[in-house]
Image (cartoon, rainbow, N blue to C red):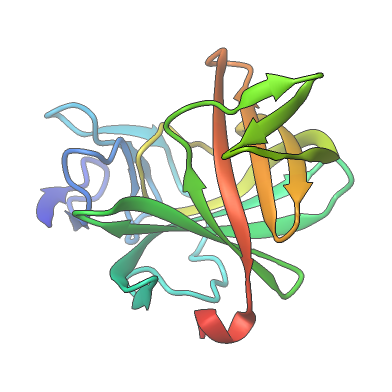
Length: 194
């Protein structure tokens, strides 16, 4: 990990995924920082106090035989007012993964490097067809830690979830970036997480 100093308050900030992190939050003053340049820049000031997290930043755990550290936390709220928590995990060799918590249910999520094939407007991944489960928009309502993209409060994403239980294939579109990412999640029992 590498240490930097917050340009707003001077506090030391240690990055767990240095070189891959583009946003980090100063836990001392609540400034969201752009870490993609040698000179740190404040993007947003005074994010409120640390949110309630089930998995604290810095917590380490083993999943599928690999040790990960929790380095980031995002809470999103969808168009109907439902919210969920996303925990960004990092291992220097395996890269990034997500643990997503919604209403007591957990999913292990990996961003796909290649988009799935689309057949009759539905995605196919690893030879398995998926059906649409839900689609709509979500916004970031809380953020804490460090991230590999330029996350910010209020960030809008258009989501589509396709299912082939126990797996879910998700598409996220960022209107400001004209970018789409796909991820594959699988349901995990809560005992696996704790």
